[in-house]
Length: 429
Image (cartoon, rainbow, N blue to C red):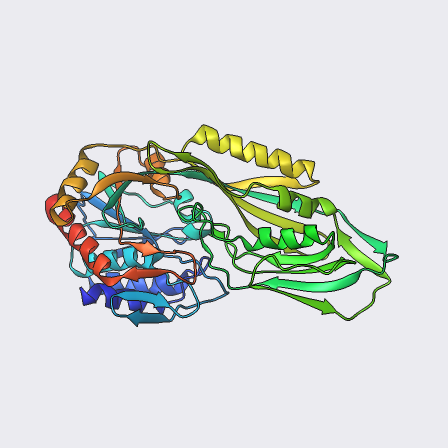
């Protein structure tokens, strides 16, 4: 099993932040060449590795990009007994462990179709634009994050982008004082599977402090990725009231500069953020997961406008549309112009001969294994649309706090799940 961990450590040293493709593509070309496989890519940097005359019955799929909380981050792995984590960054076990499983199977010569998709963490871009042919009747996605769970359904999602250009210069006739406020190093987390864990949202906390000090907004930037709960945010405000910190990680510094004029943003921007119902919206008791949620993920300013990015999720496509429409209407009422992108459908739970076979095999290793659905966006729903013939299940090791500095994975869990993968290979391939 140390081979899997060694492979994971190797690919962790390869730059794989979303939007970075060439280093990992070159690595996979070398792996394919050494293993007498072919390596195909498409215009969106997806990778398909397979034998020249493959008769694969099973496709394996993982995305190779990782969430990076700082630009060009390459995680430094910290090993503490059974636990792997990283120094002050995400670990990239989502979905680096799945990639390591697939690379090991390639090195073992298993006749499968090995699909590594790009840019999943910034809107499932690779999967949505996939232009590589899969012929296998079954697909095993390796992007789940709970050992013992066999995912057969997931939330759909849509990204919402809003802009407000209502900016004006006013006379500072009230002698407002300037302050720089920042929040850093909050816990963060995945905006799907962690959305019900009461993790603080840096942007919401900032809006609370600004609103409750009756301040004018001059500048604000925060959030890391559209599918992460924001960790960092910084703002410059003008107010005659001393701002009060809304979190212990918030720092407030007075700027000792007097200004006769202030270039301020629309007050309705902070009103929107302050009043917006962020996070968990409803639960699905039948599936035991979050039903609906929305995450206020990123805010940024330039000289002329302010931008906000949100990510909505639902286990039902009609409810997803409702959340999207409600949010768009609220944004427009607060003087924003709005667009949407990155939409992907919900994967309705589907029990079939493949999922039943995976469950049967999994129970040989873990008698408590079960079929389940998750409140996160897996690429499986897209593949179900693209390849009508294919039957899909998703498994993976237990990963705690993905997309955050606290991300960690158990080596024992990695080992347990790979035993299941090997048994599935033996039964089906």
